[in-house]
Structure formats: C-alpha cells, structure tokens
Length: 495
Figure 1 (cartoon, rainbow, N blue to C red):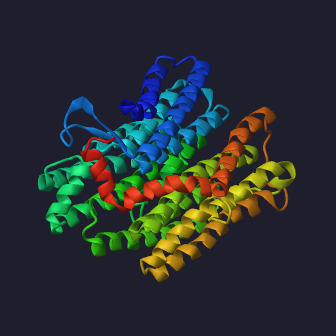
Figure 2: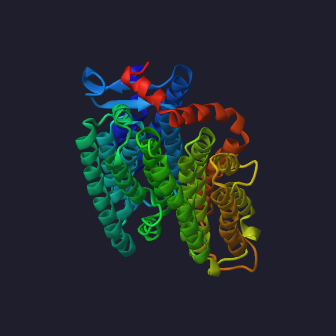
Figure 3: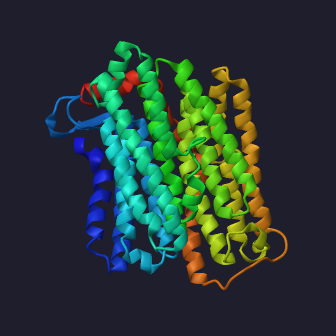
C-alpha cells in the first residue's frame, strides 16, 4: 500500500512519456489519455478512502529515516485535491476533443496535460518544501508549452509576460527556501514545523513567512500580484484556459494554506492578519474587474481572483470552521470554474465572439445551454443548495467566530457582486434580441455540451451531497487546524 499513494502521480507521468512517442496518432493519444485519467482518478479515490479510514499515509524514498529522505504524504487535504484535479482533467480533455484542434493535438498537447497534472498532484502530495519547488517547476514548464500551443500572436505576446512572472517567482521561491533552511536546517515540512515551534517563530521566521506569501501569492494571483493573470489566461484555447483556471492558481492557494497552517502559526497577529487584509483586497479587486469587463472570458477569469480571496480569508481565520469552509470552497471552485470556462467556450463557439455586447437571444436556439449556464452561475455565487453555499457559509461562520465581523459581512456582500457579474452574461447572451451567431456543426456542439453538462451535474451533486462529503472535509480541516496530526504521522513514518 505504501507506494500506492504515488500511483495518481506516476500514472500521469508515465502516460505523458508514452504519449510523446505517439505524436501523429491522434485517436490513440485521445484514448490513452482518457483511460489513464480514469485509472488515476480511481487510484486517487482509493487513496482518499485509505487515508480517511487509516490516517495519514507517507512514504520516504530510499528507506532514509525521516526527515533526511524525500517524503511524499497523503493526508485529508492532498487526497481531496488530487482526486478533484484528475476528475476535472478527465472532463476537460474529453471536452477538448471537439475544440482544441488537430494541429495542437499533434504538437504534444496531451503530454503537456499529463505533465502539468504530474506537477500539480506532486505539489499537493509532497512533504518536502524543496520538492514543492521542483513540482512547481514541472507544472510551470508544461504550462509554458500549453500557453503557446498554436502559436497565435496574442498567445506568444502573453506567454512572454507569463513566463517572466513565473521565472521571477521561482527565483524568489528558491531564495525563500534557502533562507528557511539557513535558519531551521531542514527541508522536511513536518520537521520544519517542529523546529519552528522549538524556537517559537522569531522575527526572522515571520519575515520568511511574508516572503513565502509573496512567492505563493504571485502564483495564486492575490492582490496586488494578480496583474499578470487576466490577459495571460485569456490567450490560450478554452480547454487550456479551463485547465489553468481550475488548477494552477489553486496550487498557489494550497501552498499558502499548507505553510500558513503547518509552519507559520506562532505569530498569528502579524502573518494571518496580513493574509486576511490581502484576501479582502483580492476579493475587492476581483469584483471590480468582473464588473468592468464585457468579455465573457475576462469576467470568469476575474472570478478566479475573487475565489482565491474567499479561500484565503477562510485560511486566515485559523479556526476549524474557517479551514473546513476553505477546503469546501476550494474544491467547489475548482469544479465550477472548469464548468464555467467550458460553458463560455460553447457560447464563444456558437456566437463567434467573446464580446457580450454582440450576443443575444441564445435562449431560443440553445435552451439547455442557457439553463445549465444559469445553474453554474448560481453555484458560483453560492446560492443554496448548490456547491458554493456550504463552503462560503462555513468561511463566514469562521470569520464571525474569530471576531472578524465586518470583513465576514464583506465576504457575504461579495457574493452579490459575483452573482451580478455572471448573471450579466446570462442576460446579455441568452435574453434579448438575436445577436451575432455563426454556422454551427451540431455534432461538434453536442460533443462540447455533453461533458460540460455532466461536469455541472457533478457540481450539483457536490452541493446537494455535502452531508456525505463532510466527513472527508472534517478529516482535512483537522489536519489543517492541528499541525501535530500531520507532524506525528510523518515523523513516525506514516501508518
């Protein structure tokens, strides 16, 4: 069972290697990709059940004693995130069959997706802070390929900004890790937690905590470091945008969540107060952007920024309720953002434009698309009993419990802005007089719509089935709110 926790990562890694040799055979690439993602999802689900039943699982390579070897850890947080990312990738790859284009499929699109998942899931699972940097680089290198795939002028222009920002961020990451190592003398996350507790987080550690917040904040797109995100994410084709929007910023969010609940927990009045202020400013900036734009892609992209702020607000409370809400909302946002980008892709396909002012009257011709979009929009805004409701409710409860009354009320008010921003798309695109439409291949439309509709059904099930999901969220929140659970499991070498 020990190595079984690595299967979700190893399956995508080796599949990516195999797919590189099948460049010309598109049909075989598609089949292998879907089968591999399905198999990896099943493995991730089994690992999640194992962790829920038997506690945190860990494996240290080369039989080195902890903390000297490189450790991989499956706990309540990482298993949920790994399963969600693989399931979403399955739907996005399936959706991409009808929209990514054969030219891109021949130029290593599928290996790129597999390697990005290897990096994402490796980052979620690693128990070593330097290894986290390594997995970040794996997912970033794959994202550099996917963002330029197709070589359109806009893509190439935005990719330069995207690569530059991430190169700077990666350099800062190495510097932050070096500072931490020079003070603490270890890279194992559980051991770092122990060592910082022993010296009671002096000022230098708090400074390093802020540096880590800058590094991960740049990747997660928090205020004021989100400047690169809207234009960079709008450049690639819709399946790549859906993959980026659902997964990439969430790795940055996860890294903040992990370090700020495991390491930097002894000077909450500074570190977590700063995180709370930045979370509120991130939500405000996202709301302004979402209301200012008439481009459907940009509206949903700015909603990524809002969600990052909401999740980190939950983390900043540092109480069980807030952290459980952050986990609920994090998984919800991954699912609903993928679904919304896929829906936006269909809207752009049938209208030939992403400008809301040129759209109208789609409800008459595509009623099912309209209703599914409305459900996804309500889910994003957190209208009960859909998927966003439980997470946001718990985050606000956590905020009230921590005494952050006004900022918690602001979080509730931001839900109205989110609803307004996505309902604008519904009103402009689906109501009113007939706007711009293009000739649509019904077969292609159905191949785009079917996986999208299924993913929205998954999001509905996530909201309605919150009662069944809660035990897994409880397990995750316990690990986040009590670092000793993680530390004890890893330092003893897991179960």
